[in-house]
Amino acid sequence: MIVKVSDNIISPLGMSTAENYAAVKAGRSELKRRDGLWQLPEPFTASLMDREAVKGIAAQKHLDDRYTFFEKMIILSAEKALEATDIDPTSEKVLFILSTTKGNVFLLDQRETGFPAERVLLGLAARQMTEFFHNPNTPLVVSNACISGVCAQIQAMRELESGRFDYVVTVGADVQSAFIVSGFQSFKALSVEPCKPFDANRTGLNLGDAAATIVYTRKETIDENDWVACRGAIRNDANHISGPSRTGEGSYRALKAVLGDMNPERLAFINTHGTATLYNDEMESVAIERAGLAQVPVNGLKGYYGHTMGAAGILETILSMQAIDDNNILATRGFETLGVTHPLVLSNQNQPTDKRAFIKLLSGFGGCNAALLMAKGGAA
Amino acid sequence: MMRHEVDITPNEVKVDGKVMNHNETGGALLTELYRTCVGDYPKFFKMDTLCKLGFVASELLLQAEGAPRFEPREDRAVVFFNRSASLQADTAYQATIQDPESFFPSPAAFVYTLPNIVTGEIAIRNKYYGETSFLVLEEYDESIVARELQNAFLDPMTKSILGGWLDCTDENHFEAHIFLIDNN
Image (tube, rainbow over all chains, first blue to last red; front, side):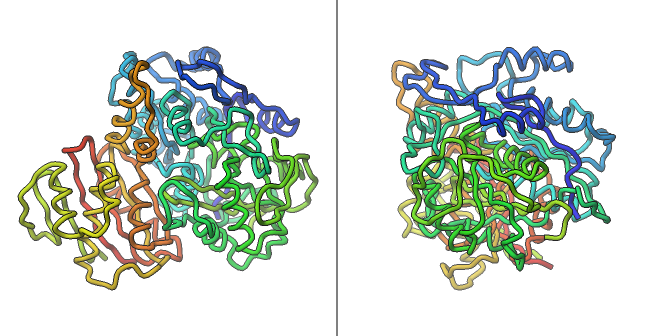
């Protein structure tokens, strides 16, 4: 089976998984209104790293200014996840997978002159990371819009199942810029206030910087505390490139595929995409209901971090594992009154649980949807 | 097992290795292929170059397959690879925000700034509810593409894949090498 070896989250809430989990459990967020940032004419609310602080931390790891902020984030996160292990990243049995949507896209701005222009290529950005670790393999970059972080984990599972690699370092990251913020603003998808997932008064999403890493390996004998990546599935709505399906088609099919014949009562929760846009949250409620999972508690973490894009699937999987390790269902920050058609079990308070499995659900532009079933102690 | 393949460059079109006649080159070639081989899908004209390339290449491929079209199915995945992700669309969108004096971010341009949009366009056209995926590599590498396509069959739902290399650096420079494969 495929099990987690170690993990890390770097976000405005901390530089480690433990710091991030403690902050989220305490209800903290760094979502703040930004006026005039990056010369953008409209204000927005985002959870952003202190770029100077990252520069200082990176310099201690010999990551100088030949590396972009994005590259520093992915290398620092991978490094922190690896330092807790005895894995030799120079081995050909170790593969690096990067999940990102926009990587170094800020380099397209003609005012940016500090880096070679070709570093806008995602494969080259990923290569900065594998060269840092002296890893001999070509890094894979998964760029599947907002579902990339779950896709990268599914990819990691397959690489390990096929036996070609012994460890996969799965890193997800995106960093915000004028390019991304203005694009979402042009879609009228951003809320100027902190986002309110699944709430009747939700007005859109927030964006956030983050990098997150999970290292996976293959293991024959599972211990009760091992986190097992059981099943993953990616399905398309075949409906619209930028709007979710009214029938929740792809998410419903992805949920059915990962559930298999598992009894839903074993699920502690479904950790949703929960972007706090009108259409996404409604679509997820339809898909969850259709999949027969309306009784399973759901939560969403965008109220703490905003939408961290390529990081989201990995970051939210890590926090969900931490929560179950702590017998907890994390609160959906920003949620007050249910505002979706199908009743969901949601709370803005942490809730106790003694269950040991969860589903991570995501959806994104291009009509793509992904689900991942994780279970502590295996066999789900 | 590979069943059919399509290759498109700015100067040449091949279906199952057989060269197709055409008049245009570059971006105009994609429009010519659309008009001569498809013609009934005006959404084509809204697409960025990567989507136009993937769309016409997949149409030629599915016409070569000759199976009934547009029947909903979940057992065919769409899995593409490239080097440049959505660079042409990214550059086009950046142009709408570059100048603070004429700052008009375009949602119609922004939606294409993700490489996987082309997988969605093909899924919508063909009612494919199965896996759609996009992977970016530093360079074309046949062994990695083959390895990842084989891995995609580890989803028990997936019985065939429409996939391959689909790269585009600007409106006139692109390369498609895509194929239909079945699980062995």
